[in-house]
Image 1 (cartoon, helix red, strand yellow):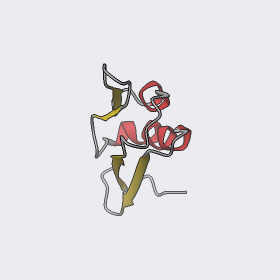
Image 2 (cartoon, rainbow, N blue to C red):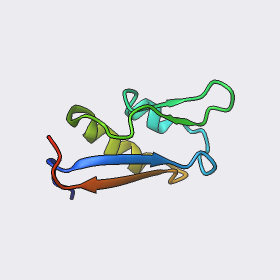
Image 3 (cartoon, helix red, strand yellow):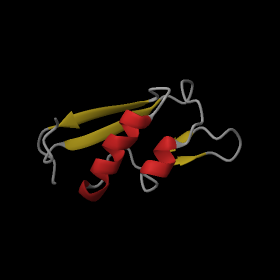
Image 4 (tube, rainbow, N blue to C red):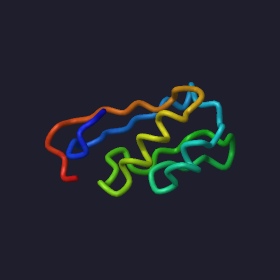
Length: 77
């Protein structure tokens, strides 16, 4: 389990994205989908503390494993 004080950094691989939309449904403040193909759009690669739990959940729910999460010590949570 990650420390809630850790800063999170997200990245996405649009080539892997299947367009399922679980990320945008789970963390709409962090992710969206493009209008053309429905692929992931990363709105906030470094989510605010209030968005981190939803961002972590979205990473776990992505069926294509197209979202990568990196935790760094020294966050502001």
